[in-house]
Length: 278
Image 1 (cartoon, rainbow, N blue to C red):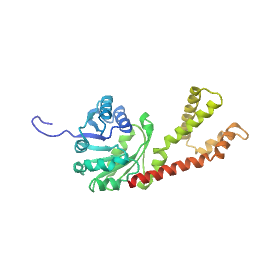
Image 2 (cartoon, rainbow, N blue to C red):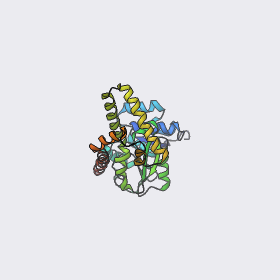
Image 3 (cartoon, rainbow, N blue to C red):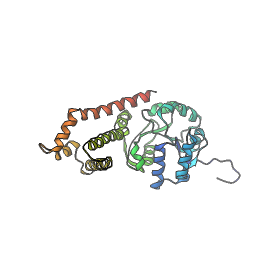
Image 4 (cartoon, rainbow, N blue to C red):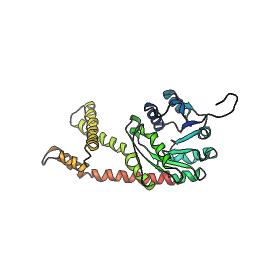
């Protein structure tokens, strides 16, 4: 910017919302050197939240959502679905075709974002999950009607610093993505709770039960990823006739464990669709 001019500084990425996921993305972008702190800034309705994020990573603080939208090349919509319409109304006068909007709000279709922002707006929708907070996230992205393949690649790059990234072939699948990988970590945590409780009931200390449970889950996930074998095949490998594993699996089957897991994905998928309808 030249001295004596009133030109505004445009930052590359603005995070509209400074919660946990925004913090994870900022951390990942900086840790992997994809971006510099001076290229990033954020806004949030809660002053303490934005102050915490700015202090932790040295990024800028936008005075309000409208200014952030106006003066960012990429705007990451990191607010809850329930407040999205109000936020879009606030920033709508400042969004142009030069902007790329990346939304991580569950259930909200790109067509709705485009309509509420005034039409031909470049939008990419993304569904990350909370393991992004430790660099092990799973994010799926899909572009809207007016975004380009290059826009989709730029959005995917944002999430590459916090885990794996995939592209959806059809946006209608994003609610299922939300029900599986978006909500899925909570299902695993619930399973972990049950394993710990069962081990404690059988005499292990809680600390011992937690240690064994966490490493068992980590090892099982590594087996799935590294061997490439389907889960039913790996399950059969450790299910000796008359053995302990089959006894445990039998107890799970009696209580409808697999059906309950599938029902969890279905219920979360339905809720994603409901959130999208507003």
